[in-house]
Image 1 (cartoon, rainbow, N blue to C red):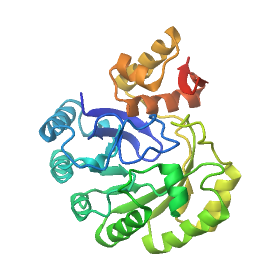
Image 2: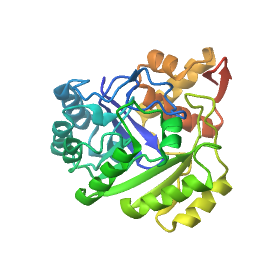
Image 3: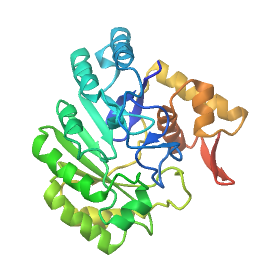
Image 4: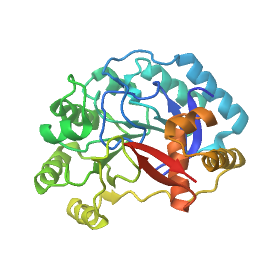
Length: 307
């Protein structure tokens, strides 16, 4: 498979069958904390980055072979920002024709001010947009957007999405210590939520080595204080601890372990040697780290994983 990955364990979506709509690290952001590394193609240009029909053919083949019970969600996510794909609408409708499984979209929210993007995502069941900061200085520092993307347009796009979209919106905020955890930023986010009215507010922090060493985690106590402040819709996203993996997933897990027993590897090294997309590798590394089977080690600014 070139455009699908998994199903892989997801902290929020159970077993998620990923659909990757852009090549590795094609993104409108270059977030300090990105677990996939630094953005190599920093762009807001929308185009058909991968062939639409090939994506749908792979998905059709997967469900013909593995069946509907193979995953809990089909998820538009992966190596970069999925809404950059110009045929997003056709892909969404095609997925809904192929499977009855709920469809989720992970997005950095950067293109939600585009009416064409909002129309394309209307059939999606759950949208999981990110909003880490709402003051321009903090937003630019943490998310490092392309010049064409501004926080005001993101907020207006999310507000329009809330008015138009009938499904669930689970808004994620990832806190980095000393960057977006100040009282002024939390208060600004609080005011933004009053307009955006997400169904859930999901609180997260740095759990894996990020693209830049500046990204450091906040404390559990801080997240608990924010959760209490934001009320019953707010929840702390716990690390994915365990799951029942099928034989194929167990094989992928073991392939990563065996590779790391031979030598330390980066995410990109593992993706190349194990024939996986980086997002899939990261999910299994998360599981293996929680088990204590692997650990991360930083050498000259590069994160390696060791068995």
